[in-house]
Amino acid sequence: MVILLRPHFMADALDVVTRSFNINNKLGPKLEAAAEQNAILRIGWTNAGDPVPKNGELGLCPAIPEGAKIRALGTLGSWTAAFGKGGTFTIQGDAGSFLGAANNGNVITCERSAGNYAGFAMASGKISVLDGCGDDLGSCMSGGLIVVRGNAGLRVGGGMSGGIVVVDGDIGNDPGAGMTGGKIIVNGRCPNPPDGVVLRPISEAELADLNKDINDENFQIPNDSVCLEASDLSNTPTKERVVSAGDLSMIGLVPTNNSRNMPYATCDTVALLGERSESNTPIALPLPLFPVIQDGNLLANNKKNNSSKVVENQPFIVHNNPRNIDFLSLHIDNLVHATDTLSSCGGALIDMTGMPSMNAEEIDGMLVAIRSLLGLEKPFGFSDGVGRIESLHSSAAYHNCDIAVCVIEDETGISEAASLPLIGRSTKSNLANTYTESGVSIGFSASADDLAKLCAAGLKFVCCSIPADDYQIIADWLSNLHAELSETLQRLGLESIDALSRQNLRALDYETAAVSGLRLTGYERPLPHWFAR
Image 1 (tube, rainbow, N blue to C red):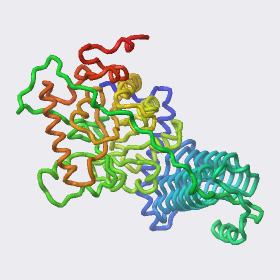
Image 2: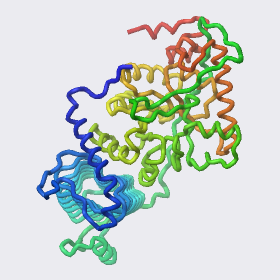
Image 3: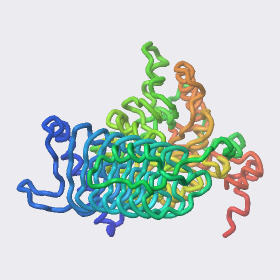
Image 4: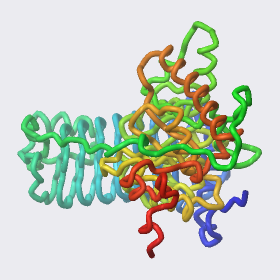
């Protein structure tokens, strides 16, 4: 396979990423020792103390542990000091987007300006910015304190559910949009808030508590500041979720020119992921399947039997408590706490559906922070909706992901059959000559036929829900899938799951042929409009 990384003109971006990984790798072993000795680690100075300011390094210092202290000099990129766990970080300079994202206890000080999404999804701790910041300050935060001196941009506190944001300056439009809790304190010009947000004077008691929390003799919030908070949401209408319009029942599996295999013939159902180089650790899927489960503790079974081996050997995608072979699903709801288990899982899948839109530099910053905790040798990938398939695949290829998962149930209503040509075209144009493997996430528990059909359509693996939250039911389901998938391959005269192709697929009705581009059974060709230009 020819492996293409990034174009040569992106060498500067690769250099920044490499430098950032090197800094994190060197800092890691020193953090605990420095915390015990109450020492300050410095970034941006030589050993002799001469200043060598950093310029654009990103994703630095993730998950700073309690007691550790770090001081940096220069202009840092995005996702600096993310996933904090109680340490102290000070930057003598500017910071990019997502400063202190998913903070859970860090005390962070930026002595100049910060970019967009400072304090994104933070749960606790304190962030101070001394010279203004960009848009979406405190977005989706659930706790903690953010203090900004200077102006802030649009949507301050958007989607926040708790915590306090203080801005000693002017703010942009839509402050508190979508907030359900927490407070936004503004000492400056504040536009009229959007629906669901009320603006009121700050009380004396609130002011006293706030200034006590800020704990700065040189900075006090005055009593003419205003407070924004969520209004009564009891009458907020709920939106009905749009789901896929179908399944795979109207797609058939047919043999080509191969003879039927004997029932005792062995069939290979294994899919390998993460084969980037000799240094990384690929993951072997006994079935081309990633079952999705909420809590990995369900997969622990003290009774050792044949069925337990099936579960023990099958990697899952897990939201909490993954085993060492499982992929940890990272999404906005578990971002603060999930990073604690990154070092002990088998890989990471970042759910982009609930994350803010990010440019390439911001995604690089996120990946440097996450992969510094995960380990560079472990596989990782992105997932996103079928409506954003081109963006998903192009971003996955650009950032050298091992897997890219297309989620069918993304509220577009696009059916599984209609998704196949969308995924196929995008895979061909964006993932050719890369090691990024394309997968799909469906909204139901897969059968063996479903696995075979989707693999025949060119997908490497399938993600789906488990049939029930019961260990034995999961074990029986996996055992039956393996047996039935082997029978399907035997019937088709194939020795491996990799031998399946679109030649083995048929649309069983006109509508499925019309949206999928598959050969219509009986007609044995795609419908004519698929040849039109």
